[in-house]
Amino acid sequence: MEAVLVYTTFPDWESAKKIAREILERKLAVCANMREHEALYWWEDEIKEEKEVGVFFKTEVSKWKDLRNALLELHPYETPMISRIDLDKLNREYSEWMARVLFG
Image 1 (spheres, rainbow, N blue to C red):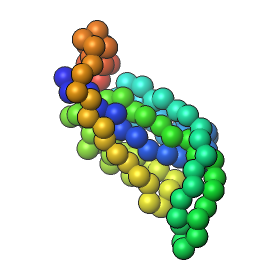
Image 2: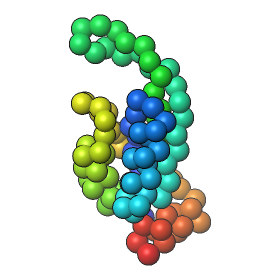
Image 3: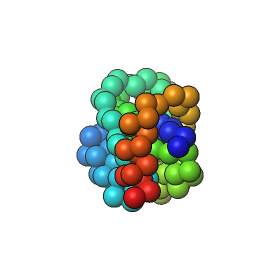
């Protein structure tokens, strides 16, 4: 199994939790780790400063495209950043658990 992390950010806890739950219900990820942080970014020719919730979804590479498409469908941002981080190594026990959850 090839494990990957998929990272994106949300404007608040409510949208992050709602979409993370939907992603988990669709079996596109086994886990969603969420952290609130301060974000500085360019938007419409000015620098914005706001709180965001960053979410790491843990999944398998074969689920990547479906997960990305679901995030694009559900995401509240006009232009969300959705990135995939390939994992070189993952302990066997966790990898086996992921496979059971994602593929039954």
